[in-house]
Image (tube, rainbow over all chains, first blue to last red; front, top):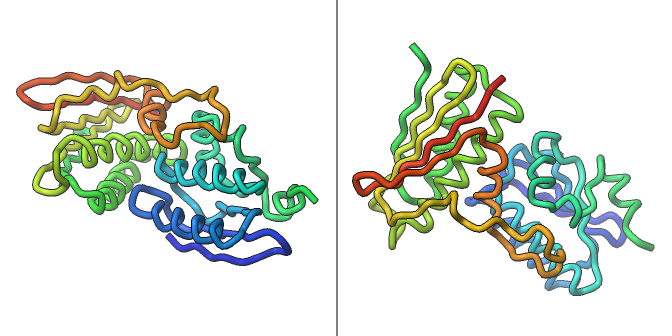
Length: 112
Length: 138
């Protein structure tokens, strides 16, 4: 897995490539926790390059959401492949994180 | 003769990569792809991860047997381990109605397996946990 960190105005963008599984989700967790503790409040995760996610990957997303929310921030997700969207629905996570088709829509939807 | 894959996976997390790549090749050979292949990979991943993390007191030194068999319109799977007796099918369902802020982190793996597989059964036999799974491919 590879994570590319960039910014778009006030939003930190994580472009994730590869598999989010039990062996790689800790790396995402460390990246996210590093950003949150250094003041990031608006985070967009771009899943365009992610071809697999399991429950340990989803666990990191929920944790990121909970930490960002505590600081008044938000987590948006975009470009999740259709076959993976289903596990977000099965877990009810599609109602927790707003999921967008692409980065432009996801960035535009962050509040003021 | 139907396609089969028989694997012995060590009880350590890095072994999950080998499980994934072997299963990927097997499913490609059987002409199973897309959503169905993802469900099969996910179910095996979640269940074998549980065995690696919880069935034995320490990681390493034990193994999990994974057997996949291509049926006429299914992929049938068996996972066997000699760890502590544990029937994952009896694990409580996660509370999907809890508020997002209070939602318990974790507990989703078995829920995915229950939701995506077409048949599931567990038996404890001769000191082994034996799980049978079946996924329709048509």
